[in-house]
Image (cartoon, rainbow, N blue to C red):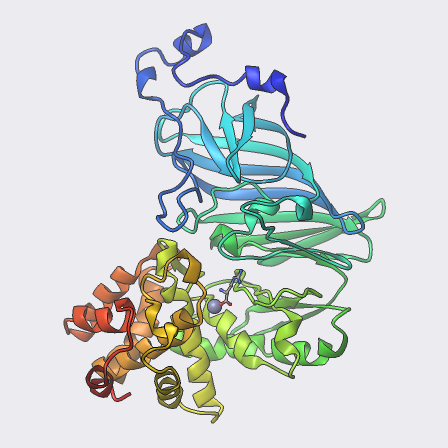
Length: 478
Ligand code: ARG
Ligand code: ZN
């Protein structure tokens, strides 16, 4: 439902303070009220996220019909204003029928590629709690922004899982990792179909042919790490040695890949416990993974419950990808990027965890794998033009962010020694737990823990668009 002219006319223009109600509400300081910025200020993605408020909780009560890909429901956001707000944006591309702010109907309109602009009846003073209710209904797979859709339809359902943008297709949000929140995701699907999301399954309730799955993710979670998958799944449950409940889900329709996918993802608990030896205690009260029947090629570290593509299991079991996505639970999810340019903190470390696993399995040491990356890309390979410390939005997921990124970590290990390096690996997730941090903050922390100046080192390994020279490499025993 595009909003009609009727709604347009009800939008209060900023500065339209001739309105008697507004003058009565806040006569003295009305001049300081202004619209929240349409972006949170990320140089890679200027329109992502929004300014003027901070969300603490998303309550999503949804219903999804796999036969038609129709999604409908109500999102209730608990937020707090960070400025005197005349209006504010959410990021969303589905059709909105109604918006309420603190109980009162609010004017709204779609703008830009993915903005929902909301004008509350009365402006919102800085530092106050705000409840925003958005009712919506749409066929997410038909909605595009910048020419693509982050919602993947499957033969028996649909999936919201993408990076850096995924929420636009299933819930309105302040879509940037800087604004983390807790989630209740409640989704009704036809009996016999399952809905998978993050965290713990609080309950399932069946009524009138529909089964409602009530999921809760009770620790701060970035918007891109929220996921929803609807389809026909086999669900397995268990518990890690450390006592964390595990729920995994495998599409019944994975064909030849079913065995390999299940054989890999069933190792989740064991791997999370193994990783905790390097990164510290597992930070959440739920764990698992899900493999839907999608043709999508990537995996994603959706919080507590990563998304895997069946294609990753086409050659047989692939425990390494499970190690990668679970490593992100610390590097990416617990400590999230401060801006998207900080992606090395996610991908370099998740790749390095795969190298540690390889070493553990006797399939090649981290040093050997680092040597291989160094040797297998000649100096004129475009690989070295990508700076893992600031790759640019087009190269955010370039192989170099992963492999050159992990190579930099092996070089750092050789530079500062094992004691300092492993202290760093474990100390970082604790230092910035449930928050955000940048590559610059990691460098500062590495200098603090190792007691060495590392400016030149970081520049060579992460910020030069060229292959580190033999002397730099030799200094790092590469
Ligand atoms: N963080 C994901 C991983 O390394 C990568 C996601 C890439 N996103 C994409 N849309 N291709 O596992
Ligand atoms: Zn990754």
